[in-house]
Length: 165
Image (cartoon, rainbow, N blue to C red; front, side):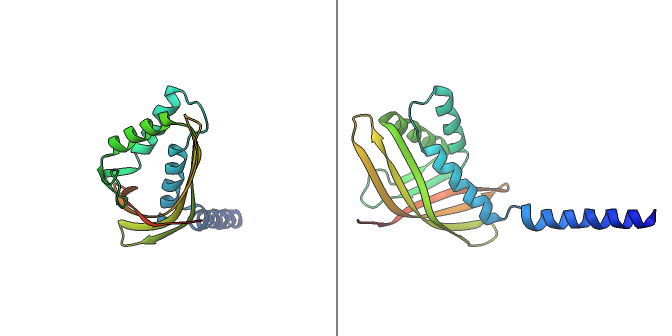
């Protein structure tokens, strides 16, 4: 009987160790998940119902800190935005496009402390506007994130470089 208890404890200990080292989310994994949600929320596959747009808007606003700065050289969109303003801008933008796809490539995350992180990535934004014009934009972006109440939130974006073809 003692032999079975020892075996059961060993199996349980092994399962706990496996979960801890394999399935536990690291900060980097949590940050990468935030970028995935950002890209999904900003994309539009076609006609969207009001409910779908509301859900995307809500999930998008949950990704941002109280004030998120956007630095786009020589652009009127540069400034500081609240999560509600970011969400509102996304809804306005979705009304302008038939389709829009945001894809993030080459995402590199750097931990800048226990509650701060930065990331650099390539953003590709493609799609078709309501008036039929196609677009395909690629930019190198720097992002800053801050951890509040255990959740990683975007607090700044800056276009690092325009990539020319």
